[in-house]
Image (cartoon, rainbow, N blue to C red; front, side, top):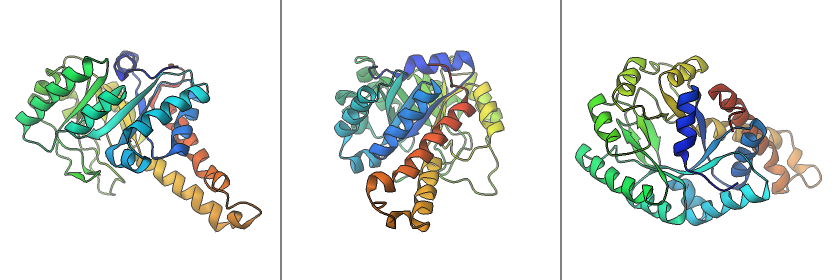
Length: 288
């Protein structure tokens, strides 16, 4: 199945009161693991590359070719969107040209008027090629590819203005954080989420920092209009834990256990299992 835009899958998710998982990939193994988890769950899925991960993998063209070719070679039949996560303006335009089917232009660190103007331009160029667009208002806490956000709550009026640029879905700060959540985290601000949802003309919302948010808060956020949930840190954690266990048990020293195909297999399987579990959490299983 060819890559698809995220617009329709998120529209269906919002109408069906579930969310689509958007899982960041970092290499071949992770890409296969995400696709396998989505296929086995019969769920639509978004595969994301951050700017840093794409550079690590060899560039946006490599990422596009890898995902496209794996969909074909693995016989993937569920809808898959390839999404740029937290992209700067030039990166968003580059991904649109290469063939990504969804992009996030993150101008949340810019003066708001500049964020709006660049968002409008990205929307125009993306929609001309059938590509969906995500933008952000109110920074998400933590760090993502060097962009550091303190996690302030988004201004509903700014969210309304951003929605009116024609974007397809909106990321807004509601107390969520990239990376691991501290013990004293106050939780998501559902009041602010409801305020924002009321003024953005029915557009789906995006929950960044999905790793570590409790299930009950995830489900409440979905009930209030969140239709895309980003997961990265948890995948990194389970991959590292499974790989560490394999080595600490000395399995890399047994026979050809040092072969990277064997060495990386436990971590890859762990990512697939996490993807399937989060798909269950988000309610998108069986929705392909």
